[in-house]
Amino acid sequence: MESRWNDLEKQELMIRNCVLTALARQAVRFVPVGISARHVHLSQADLQVLFGSGHALQPKKELSQPGQFAAEEQVTVVGPKGKLERVRVLGPVRSATQVELAMTDAMKLGIKAPVRMSGDLAGSPGCKLIGPAGELELSQGVIVAARHIHMAGDQAEAYGLHDGDRVSVRVQSARPCVWGDVIIRAGKGHDLEMHIDTDEANSALLSNGAYVELVADTAACQAPAAPAVQAAPSVSAIAQAAAASFAAAASAVPASTVLDLVTEQDVNDAIRANQAELLCTQRAIITPAAADRSAATGLQIRRV
Image 1 (tube, rainbow, N blue to C red):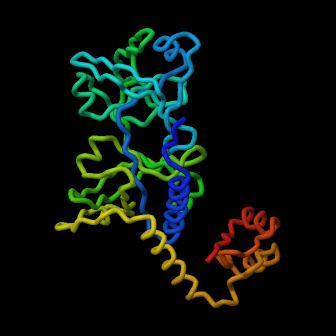
Image 2 (tube, rainbow, N blue to C red):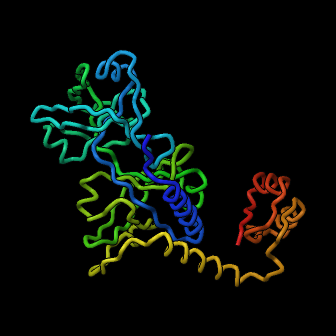
Image 3 (tube, rainbow, N blue to C red):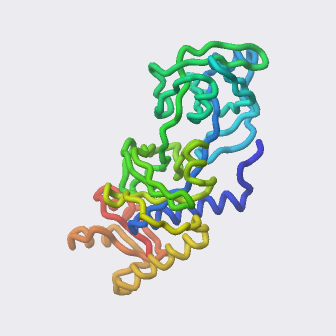
């Protein structure tokens, strides 16, 4: 399978998300953007109809979310007014077939697709799918995906968010805007990235890898009257900002309170002192008992 990233790019992605998560703990909340083109998810039964009995999806390249991939397979999507050819299938297979389009795609097909979260298919319109081995009529399953942000559990915690929360994000580009009703999808199988479709990306002049800022409330969501164009920060710029943030935090803390070794006794002492967190150095050793006690009591151990 062709990898979306080489080893260096994968390391950069991991560093980027680690740094963004660290910044989020300092109330600096930016999220990278991934743009989703039209695509299809197939059930196992529908895969057999379209590509033949016994067929299995052939991975082409990895996607940003763990375990997800773009497959070699493509289908034609047909609606009352037109068709879209060579629409990519994404894997792995799902329990129900789903067609995700941009609104302009749906208009071309003559389909009134609702804006829905992935998997919310009840009452949605259908279409015809044509593959090399057969075709089928879907009674439902065509949607325009609601914009959303994927987060792993620890990332969501850092951002102060939970699965199902709705937030607003500010876009700073040549066409700045604020998007509301952005849904958080948090937990296992997710990694930090906001997903929008091609219509949304084009409307705001965004590209893959751009950054948007989470804003806290309605007042903060007001776009500036005459905004300047701001380029998306690079990984190195984010890392420098994180380093400066941590340096400032560390400089405000007496050296004697930053530990090189964290034991269960240290955690218990911090709890008795009503501390919200326990600080240690980046290379500090945290004993298993200290980690277990920290998790059980909710006391945060933070490296500075």
